[in-house]
Amino acid sequence: MPEDLEIRVLREAGFDPSVPLPSYESDGAAGADLRANLPAGDVTLNPGARALIPTGLRIEIPQGFEVQIRPRSGLALKHGITLPNAPGTIDSDYRGPLGVIVMNAGDAPFVISHGARIAQMVVAPVLRAAFTLDARLSATVRGTGGFGSTGTD
Image: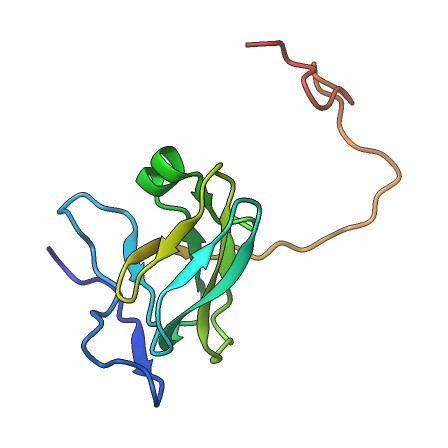
């Protein structure tokens, strides 16, 4: 698989160096899996609870790109584990700790184990827009119809 872009990674002091770096788990994967790095031990999330789960990493994203943090579909389907701010955005100028806000939307407690795959990160290009104040907007067939206005299915 060709490596088109480099994301520099720094492992934070005090975190377990044996926890793997983000990795693509298949040749066609768009997201690299992130793992929990929990030197203090596993975290139990009760239904409705959320927690900031550390990865023990900091990353350097090239200018013109972002990293999106997304839920893992298997955790969402099987256990109701999701990310309440999905997709979370990490900007190219952020150099702080990489943590993942995890929420239990399921009906049973869920244990996040040290080293477990908890989310995925997708590297994406960023387009920046110029915002221009105008007196009117162009007309469309949809017009001002919002939430549910295009049908029920």
